[in-house]
Amino acid sequence: MTTRLLPSRRPLLARALSLPCRRLGLAALILAVPTLAEAQNADDGKAVFNKCRACHQVGPGAKNLVGPELNGLIGRKAGSIEGFNYSEANKNSGITWDQATFREYIKNPRAKIPNTKMVFPGLQDEKDINDLLAFLEQYSADGKTK
Image (cartoon, rainbow, N blue to C red):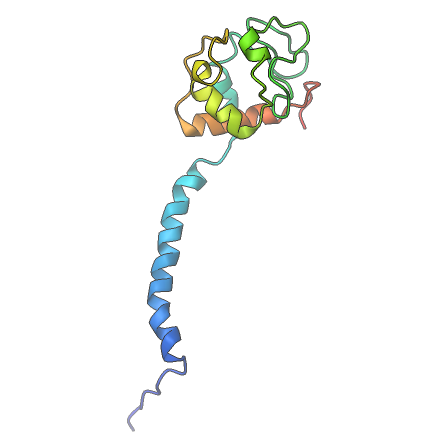
């Protein structure tokens, strides 16, 4: 007895689109891999914050040092921590810190706010920036973790 192959019941258009759709799905997965690798990690951000620790504190009991304490940074107006002597450039920058502004600033502080007192040369690695943001964002204005 011979087996006769039945024609596919899928319409011709669906069969024609299936291969490009599979290729598109594979391309999307390949493009997503770097994004997944750059996901924020607060534990890694704690290590990145060691580069900031000489001038800044964060967490319970954080105090102003050479730079202001960084509790509750995201959503805060630049130059607004009481008791810290900010540069006029920082106080008058009109910045309210959000992720996009912080990312731009931390890459090159003096380019974002010319005449700032901050002498840090900046972070270039996107993963370090993502991780630092995750670390900082876990602290509310009172220094408690959210």
